[in-house]
Length: 295
Image (cartoon, rainbow, N blue to C red):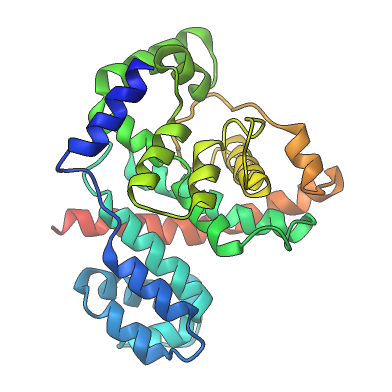
């Protein structure tokens, strides 16, 4: 309880706490409007020179461009990528940029690679389960992207406590979230959820981030979203994709697997599809690091 109070006080008072960039809300409005054009979206992106240059670099990368040739304008980039892909790319790059400087002892590229693949894995899992009618794919992507953001908060503002967590994790060989609850009485999911509440994100995303390590927690209103983020995190951790700061493989909820209508027969194809997304995540996460070095 004491750490929870300290966390809330920190979130209320720290001037360097990252804020949700206003450009994300504006882009979300534009992407959700059927009347919006690539030129409308490009106009918003173009107001942020860093984001504009990153979107151009992504669209011209071998993964996205193929043999289509180089393009020189953000409008052309949005048109090439399509609205759905552009929406996720812009959100991802903006989130990475907004947390610049946090988690100084972490490998940011590997951290965001893990988060990015977890975000995409929510979509992969949806393809094989029977949850498409109950899960908003954009909310699932956002929740997957932000599921470990509490790790950055811990590392930045509570380094001594975070060190104690790692020592216990390593000494006992237990998952990081278990060590966090033993030391702090709270895990990084709940810490991340507290930050997202300060950002006024939808409660569904807040819940998914808060309880992704505890999908059996009582009174969860958006259970399927929590469950799919939990499974996405599990898959990425088992495959060793990036580094979300979890260390030892986390526990796995068989109930979540069953509730989402997954089958063991799906596992090989799920793994294949998730591994195929590593190239995409490497492009986006490495862009953030390259941008940091040029600042």
